[in-house]
Amino acid sequence: MAPSFNSSNSLYDFVVREGNGVKGVADLGLSEVPERYIQPPQERIKKHDSRPCDAPPIDLSKLNGAEHEKVVDEIVRAAETLGFFQVVNHGVPLQLLESLKDAAHTFFNLPAEKKAVYRAGVSPSPMIKLGTSFVPEKEKAWEWKDYISMVYSSDEDALQYWPNQCKEVALEYLKLSSKMVRDIVEALIGKLGVELDDSKMEALLGMKMVNMNYYPACPNPELTVGVGRHSDMGTITVLLQDGIGGLYVKVEEENDDAGKGEWLEIPPIPGALVINIGDTLQILSNGKYKSAEHRVRATSNHSRVSVPVFTLPIATERIGPLPEVVKKDGLARYREVVLQDYMNNFFGNVHAGKKSLDFARIN
Figure 1 (cartoon, rainbow, N blue to C red):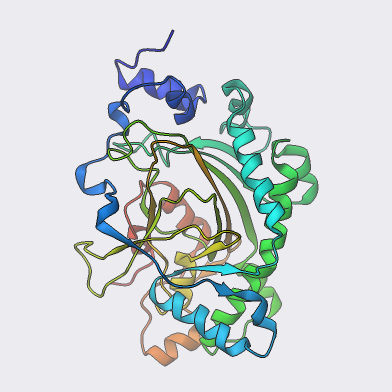
Figure 2: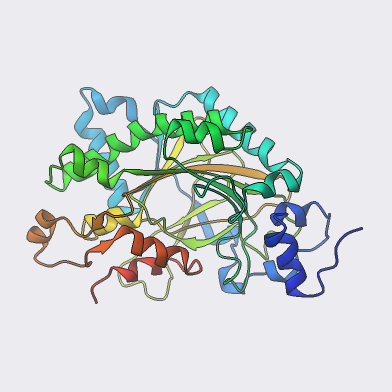
């Protein structure tokens, strides 16, 4: 018998406390989404309000050849404008990408009680967390998404604690994408006229985390969102899309306080990975590089998955505009913050576009 959700508490217990997630809600075969998932009209995603992003993918294999400068310029241009770009010939085998999608579906199709062992508070490791929405205890309207988040500490811990259904492919993906991330960040920092030694670069890229996101088919995708408007807080994110689509990024306009910027859909390109700039790089570059505000639409006929790798500074690192850039610009637009404090603020608030940057912004 389907549980009745006649109070928001009973839905919270079912979805969050018992670990059923939105997958559990979708499996009930409801003809409409529960009220808790209905977004205010201004947050709903209307397909006709956006257009496809037609930027061609960047060929990373050319980064180490005669066309190095041209490729660096393409990366820099994307980071300065949209904060999002797609890459091909990135060094992650296509077979591994297919295995990752399969592993994500396999994990999320497990019985709820097998997934629930990874909930915060009961998980075998504080580095692994099964969650749903973003901060369900604070959000007025929930997001139509479940996820498992796995922070990397060592190969041994990953192979011991990460779920059997995905640990090997997720670890391989994280390691192979790390080289690409380093190459991209070195190119971007170099173009600012700054040289960072290995220890500083390691501090900026020292925390790595792979998530698997699951968006079940939704009876009313026009009423809810898969993920609400936000920017990522780290240095850089590598994202595997599964081919179904639904990822939107905002074109940032000067003095756009009313949030009127245009939305572009990032079309899935077979074999490509999506790169997006995080808040950390926007702060380091004193605003030259843009962290990308993005969101995800729910879909009606297919469940879909995505697999991001987040690369962040280590938690104790102080991040602020690079001194050489401030000297050139004549002023600092952001104050120096400890990454852990920035994280606490980021995860302590609901998604609200790029509001997370206000924590470091100098007014």
